[in-house]
Length: 235
Image (spheres, rainbow, N blue to C red):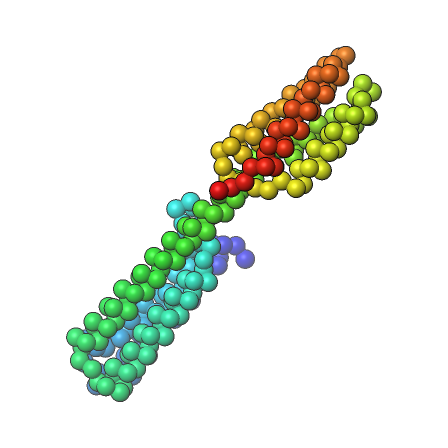
């Protein structure tokens, strides 16, 4: 089932359900004053629509991503719905409260529900911000690992490469497994420096004949850079 089909079916269900609610209110209106009748109908329709809003209009944050805190959104929805339904039952079946009081109470409930939804959007933004930060922190690490993997592939079976260089490349690959993400500018600079050094070393492998000292110097420089990076932590 495509997304458009789901949206259309959801819209049809929403309209059909709303029609049932309206019909039920008119059938069981009883002697309720028109203003209270309309207020209860509006509140009931609002509660009903809140359970469909995420299907018809997906919650999208400022980054264009679907809100990742739907659990909180449903919690706010259920709390508001429960309080609004209890208020309608108490005001109309138990206390027979005046229209003005009912209007004020329902407006307060809507206000607090709106604050809850704003809080949900704010929390979702924080979640997205943390996620994006983690992705950004790992980007440099991923480039480091990819550059070493590429160098190792180029060095495999190379006739002019010494066993020492092969061992150093293997050690670099092993040491990268124990590096931790870090969001500081110093860590990012060291990550770029490491990757650039490894790429330059890989380019040196393409020379004919190769310069063993140049390659060994590059690997040693990469080792020093990696050692500094491993000693760098987030504040």
